[in-house]
Length: 109
Image (cartoon, rainbow, N blue to C red):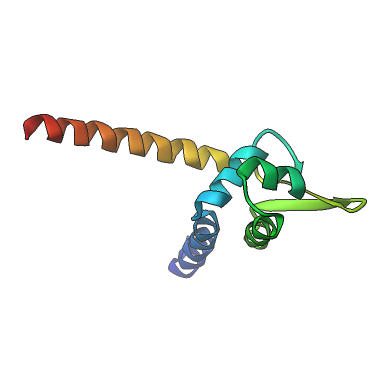
């Protein structure tokens, strides 16, 4: 891969990572891993106002993380590529490793 293509890939990856970088968005993705949901159910599950949830959903749709369809008056969202949740499993493993290292450090103090 050329440096130019690599740079474009890194830019696009950063855009997706940026769209994930909010606790509410992570909660939404976690909820959607089990299947599509309407905005009303997403808002209730994450404990936030529909307007706030809609704004966060829009960010993730624009980043290509989510897709949606209309069902009458309802808007139904789903993960465009469900493997995105694997990313958070990896982050959790990193956090566990950090916790182990911090525990070792505390024992030495």
